[in-house]
Image 1 (spheres, helix red, strand yellow):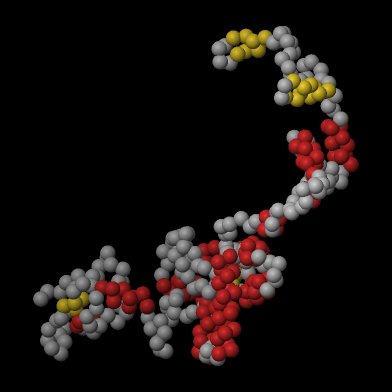
Image 2 (image 1 turned 180 degrees about the vertical axis):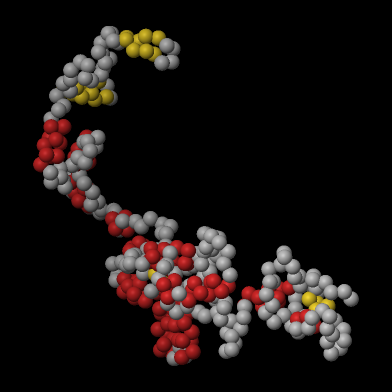
Length: 340
């Protein structure tokens, strides 16, 4: 049988050339494995015997094996121990396995942490690694849950963690304490849990925003946290002859009085002048007083209230007798009197 570059012979895999013969004196053809310019199996990692194409891919993915049996050139061979995953770095050019190993062996590589560090697939920006809760954040959540005044919504908003995860943290803490009392936590289980904790990235949420992981680990809250006034009963039981003034209503609902709200609406068109409360600048207070005293006359007509202010012709409104273009019909329009 003539030698073909499309087939791998067992004698060739064992180190024999096509012109030599093995002990049996015959060649055994291995089908399904391609060698050529279009194949990425460009190196021989011990392809001896019959191998299917997926198994050949697996052997090449593992790479070369060291003396102790470790695939030392595989980026995923050694598990991380500093909460930074060993993902393949994202580069614009094609890099080989040796380049990846050299780049990850650099001590400064672990310090240059960015958003791509926590993406398992460099070309997929939507898949990201989940973050574990740090021990400080976990203890803070458990401490807040012991406070009877703190609700689940408030704890979720304070630390930037979804309320389902807050409830799961409390439940797992109870199970952990129960296992410790029953002696179910063996040394192997504790070692495994510690190893997994060191492999995964951790976050402190809103407890501290010191690192990039703290900012990326903050979870988006799906629900709006209700205020404290909306979490209590807003029904006042009183006698039918009791007096209940607007001031009492404002005090009960923890809201400003009606007169103050009207003043706010009156001065809402003035910048930074909502009310006199919180206004410390004397010049701003003076402007507010001038704005309040500018009204000189009030005209009542039906359901409308018109406020008249002193103004000069030419500075406000239109002068009587001045013609203006009608944009729709292209006609001249002239006002003869003031329509109030």
